[in-house]
Image (cartoon, rainbow, N blue to C red; front, side, top):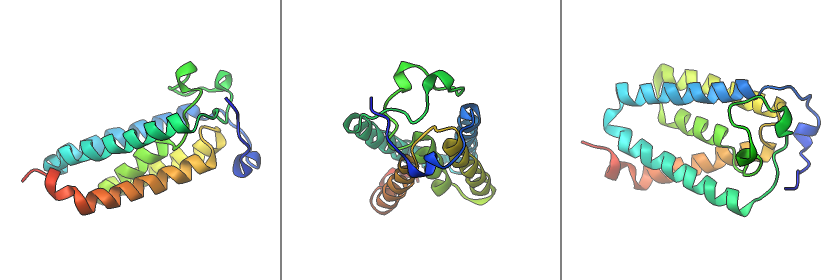
Length: 160
């Protein structure tokens, strides 16, 4: 798989931070699940639908953009390593799912998720977990999908 040049990554130092961004996105997931079941139980089917769409879109783009991971997997210290993860980095699942959780949450949960999302993105850059355009694309894809689903699907999938 070809490894691409990235202006931002080329100008940042590299640190082994895989474990940090994997833990932070895992915490985002746990916090969002607590939020959904504690405050928005009637929205759970909608949340499952929107995250399912997000990962279906990501899967499609992984297939059509077969380029290599920006970091060496031998040096990677996160949860997700091995041959399965040496390709398919566009768009960032860490950023996309974290940003979607941010968009769908509210109150103190939204603030905590935002803080963890910022930590995730910073450590993705320093750990070479994703190219900079993977991160930006994940934010754009998540926002576009969120906007579409809020307008056309939310009323059909929120239980009354």
